[in-house]
Length: 430
Ligand code: ACO
Image (tube, rainbow, N blue to C red):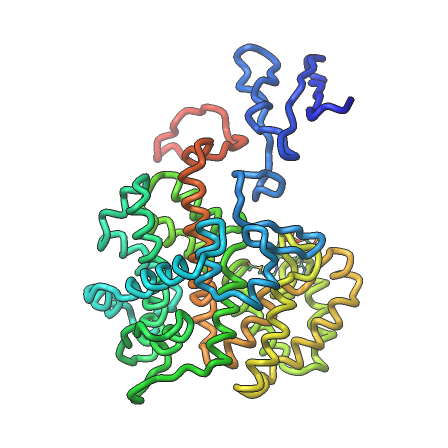
């Protein structure tokens, strides 16, 4: 009869240990009993960048990277992108079930109500330099919100958490739009209750002198789908930051600012910006082979941006949906000339041994930037758009972490390889 356990022999001592296997994992703490002597600290596992360490149990998002599967609360991303709205998806992520009609109405009403920001938030944002990066403005303003809502510290009060979640999902669009308007020197536009979440965001960004801004329905839908595709992605770098910082029991605005900072990096949310810069640098289809050669010879220093993923070792399912979405958007906006370079680059890379061997496929960012650019978003806004969608995932993961009785303040161990104790040397003798 097979047993759900792992038998380990410590060859230093000859002792055997039996470690239970639970949900396909052994507990890191079970290694601690493995010691060479009584005063030994016990065995640790070494796993830089968490390549093979589960830091939590979660019921939110499922990914099978080899098969290219992504599901939120069990629902395939393809079905949600086709049939649901972003706010419906945000409800699903947070509550675990799709909302009924009254639940959805209530959820939408509360989020819409909280799209407004305090007038001092505007003043705060006015302080940024005229060419400040919108993601820097977004991140800092999210952190500043914690000073507007001191009640958010009551993280174990369910009602307070609910309120902060409404505020966060509501206000991220307004703050993102203000960051954009600030960067181009236009006055801020206030939210409007009658529009959809994506439509209202488009209005706050692009409204000029017209009395009633009417978002283009194709672009409004496309943006909503992009928010759905970016809503959650299990324990990615920024979500890990949200959980890790949140585990100190700080308020959710501060934790979300940390997540947003993590998302800013070019290996994460900054990747679609990097894709566009790369496509521009390549410039024309005939330069692709030389570029691919450089990437391969660079051995990791120069990368094919928008390719590869820590978890997907197959085509990213979100990239497939976005590729299709691009056709709808380009019909309205006109074709992005960089698309031809992207399509050819993808074709060549997918046949090249270097990429095939390493299972490097296009990820969500390979095509999203082309759509955003066609919709007239400046590249600096790309990570901000990602952050808007991901906010629903961040808050769902944050709450799951708080309510998980097994979680504690996140505090990894290290293997200390530095000097043993040595004596201080005065400056004159160095
Ligand atoms: N172009 C060229 N080579 C690559 C690429 C790439 N985009 N990605 C990985 N490789 C190579 C590495 O050089 C390495 O080769 P080696 O085994 O010969 O050393 C091998 O593939 C494995 O790469 P790692 O860096 O170990 O993979 P890791 O899982 O750490 O990185 C990451 C994943 C960061 C996404 C990486 O693939 C990458 O940098 N891609 C480009 C940036 C990007 O598109 N990021 C967006 C990710 S999706 C998101 O955040 C929404």
